Length: 205
Image (cartoon, rainbow, N blue to C red; front, side, top):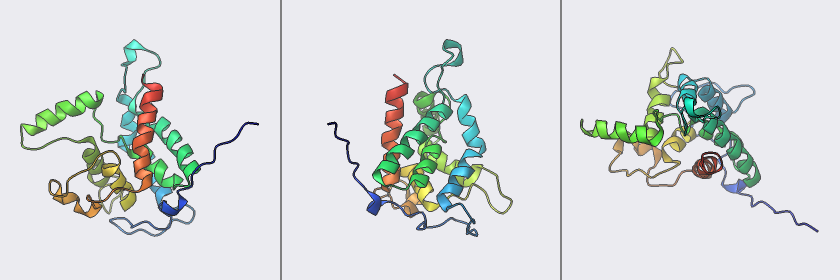
């Protein structure tokens, strides 16, 4: 008789939907959406999310009818992430929001485009990093509200944007000290790094 695998529950380590550390600008709780569901919706309806459609992932349009772009990749990562998060007992809503926002700061032409921008920025004493750029987008560039700049996302989503795929030195990035750079991000953010790779490996090869 075939045996079914039993998923390991990490629910005790999950970020609770009611336990967010809040937003920069306090808001009245929504009657039927939790904080991370609201973040997800704001990301999906942002201008930057729509622009992912025109950023190719592997092929350009003229080479294939099945070309991949950042938007299709992001949707796939969100689906994979939700499935795994549900099996592990993690916060599915936070995972989905992080999956949808994880590539928001990518320039055109993939990592080659990021490298070119970084080279250009270093000539002016700065650098370019797509995670940090995504944080700038959601905190400053998006103009959706009259009272403040940005999307006013929760701390957990903003933290996950910069910490899901690499570490940043507190000494090198003092402006990011509020995100506890000396600590690992929540498991929900760490999961995005893995599902991002799964999305690449299963579709881009």
